[in-house]
Length: 406
Image (tube, rainbow, N blue to C red; front, side, top):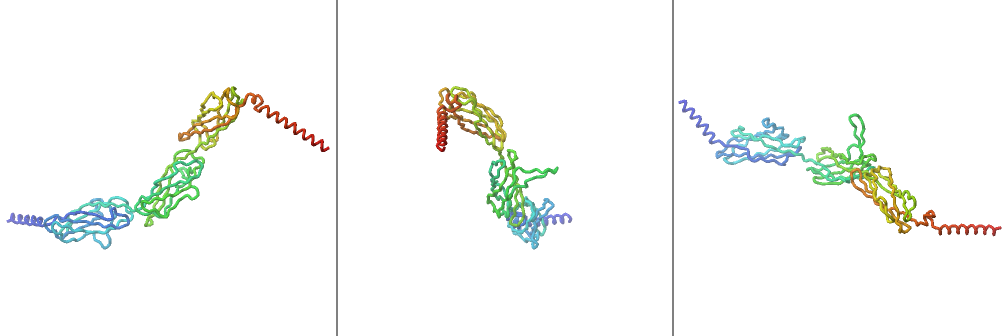
């Protein structure tokens, strides 16, 4: 008898299972995707009855803070919504759709959050499925897409030209772009001045900048005269607001090459003795640097149209700012060279602090004298005789007028 009762209960259980549905969580989607902090999203869940038997008393529950998955999802149900939904009966091999409207926390960080989707029948939860929702703030993001000039000169004012692009998904308002503070204070209290400082209006401003839009701003800057010639990072500070009047700040950097160019020139200092055909002479040329930077590894080449130079190339080395040097060229004008105007072609090659090569070419004018001019100190006989005659004539005219007046 007992065996018959046990068998009866087993048959009833098997029969109940055979005539129960098989509820599963099906397709899930949400919009907008990704979800936006401070906004709303609609969640759609398909619950499927994967059985040939109708499911009775189907229920669905939305678990937004499940300890099972460690969720700290920043999603909240509206006050007029319940997390547990009574769906009712779902026919065999059919599905139902459950919709929830959720609010996303305004302080939610960008990331992916997991919630639990739970379904069952006969009024009881039977299965739970984790589901991930991505949150990404719809906010403006500013970046420097272009910057110039690539080179700036020590001691000079120049506009720093920046192209600002909004790479975010929301419009930026009341933008302020400027250089970061012009000085810093170390942990020991020492004030360190920056070598690059803003001049005049230290900040540029824009009323707004839409998504994917770009605008150009100009910030006048000065390179301190004592700045070293090298590469610098300039900190650029941004302040702006989104459409919800949330304030954002950011600091980005642009690189510039600060140069301190040398300014090289040369002139004739001395020719001793005077240049005469067939006679040796020494020409001294002064070379000087009036620029802010040094000229390094300087070499000089010299050639002329009046004779052969004993040495054609000279090594000078470094020529610092406000410094000078000289070279002495030994030359013997050709025996058949014509007296008169001639020239020396001087070429100066050097490098700056970055190793960039520079070349200065200059033509210096000289005069080659004849032997007769040289013996007379460089002045011909005819001009001397003419000067003497003029002096005698002038004196005679003066004496004549004086006697006539008496």
